[in-house]
Amino acid sequence: MDWTDKKVLVVGMARSGVAAAALLARLGARVTANDSKTAQQLEEPAKALEKLAGVHTAFGQPAADLLNGQEALVISPGIPVDAPFVTQAREMGIEVLGELELGARLTDKPILAITGTNGKTTTTTLVGLMMQMNGQRTGVVGNIGEPLCAHVCRPDEEDVYVAEVSSFQLETVKSFRPSVSAILNLTPDHLNRHYTMENYLDVKCRIFENQSGEDVLVLNRDDETLRGVAQRAHCRVAWFSIREEVDEGCFVRDGRIVVRRDGQEQVLCRADEVRIPGPHNLSNALAASACALYAGASPKAVRHSLATFEGVEHRLEFVESIRGVRFINDSKGTNPDSTIKAVEAMTLPTVLIAGGYDKKTGFAELMAKLPGSRIVGLVVLGQTADELERDARAVGFSPVRRAEGFRQAVLMAYEMAHTGYNVLLSPACASFDMFRDYEERGRVFKDLVAELARGKE
Image (cartoon, rainbow, N blue to C red; front, top):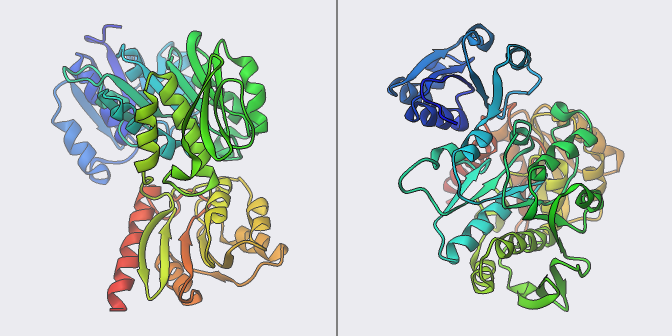
């Protein structure tokens, strides 16, 4: 599509919105950049956009007031597709799309797209490393932080993209067609937006709705919900499993990671050579291996990446040891299932810090995992503190302490810990009641730990 002189309204000036607005302006569109926040509240994004030729800024204004005359509306993933102004735009005949869809339309490079409730960032980063090790210039983009629109339509555009894709981004795809897609798992999350698990699954399945022929869909054989998803696909399906052998894909046999493609088997490496810890990360490693191999990476590139990849920031990230107490940052644990995996990865007595923005997921299953685990204490905070404390006490777990703020939570957890213990931040919740995002929450946690360490010197 030629965007020259097209009038486009871009709403939501976080990273994806800024990238979309900048790209459209570069392509000759007449862009209106809008956000409900004022220029003063937006700070750096506002300053960057106000300098761009072809971009008119309309900050602190309702988007609905700007729809007249627009030919397309690009919305941030944070904006619900049933928001009144989005519905109004559709009724006016204005095309509605997201930044991912826009970027994908503007590149002919292959895209490897990864979604799921948990493990997306780890798997996406690992696939990116595998493709780089294979000698390809690789853009790691999407929900992981770098928008696709910041990469496409450039003279130095990469050879391939590996995209972490959220359910919010998938709500606005239309022609998006990755050459390889993957759904890692599906557990309750974002039900405050998707309402039911059926809706949530349907949105996740949009990642492969345009795939066909030799395109590949990679699915988790160990996830009961995803076993039935293969029937919806019109492309090749490959599996990964840490529990059983699969006819096509990656699995573990006799302690070795094996890939089986078109009836031919090859051992990649020993399972214990995978550097990132925990059974959930072994599953992520298998998923990444399948994605990269079906995208053309060599077994050598995959093997080397598995043995050297140390994980991502904010995901079971060791921060510091203070007088024998190890602090672990799992701020990316934004739902109960993710925190369950973090709990299961603990090998030492651990004090857990949990709580935050309420996504209506419930915590009964998480709390039921604590008795008999390595968790020996719980500090709760945020919007969900009452529910977490109630569910913990319902299963007889103690001690549980309530913190009124994040700093107090870290200090409480340290007080509850002894030499040889862990303090684990794995909130099981989003961060929006206290922080901009999970990354800011993780950075503040690390800053508080560093401050605590200085005080104990």
